[in-house]
Image (cartoon, rainbow, N blue to C red; front, side):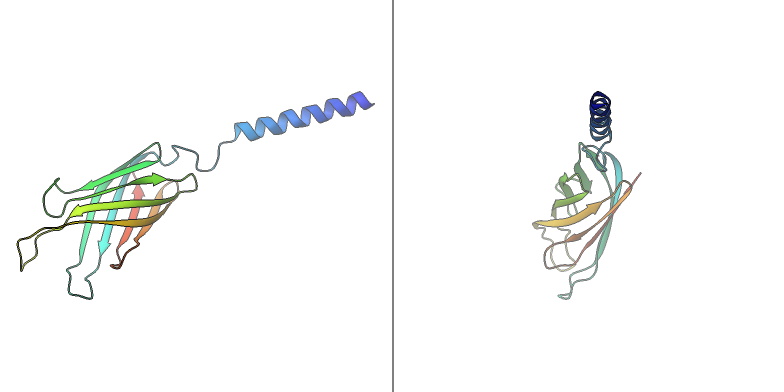
Length: 140
């Protein structure tokens, strides 16, 4: 009788261990990999800064996101980069070159962080500094 109980216990442990090792985490590394579309919307600023909307592609490989809008080193150029955590949370970094204004033909570089949350097919994010900008991510 003891042998039967021991055998049953060993089988239960083996089955449970098999389930634990065989079931992937909900958002394991690479879960978010693929092509994504990004929409960045920044409304007109309280200081009169013009609002704008950028739509651009991004790619996630091994849970690392890279997206780029515009032509490198031209006004309005922006890159978006960062690592997605297994739970879908991410702190992304946007860096870019401002577009020329109507009043001045100057461009300046900028950088800011974006707090984002992804699931398997979509995501959203917010700029974490003074100007409120929204990000929407949609998987292709």
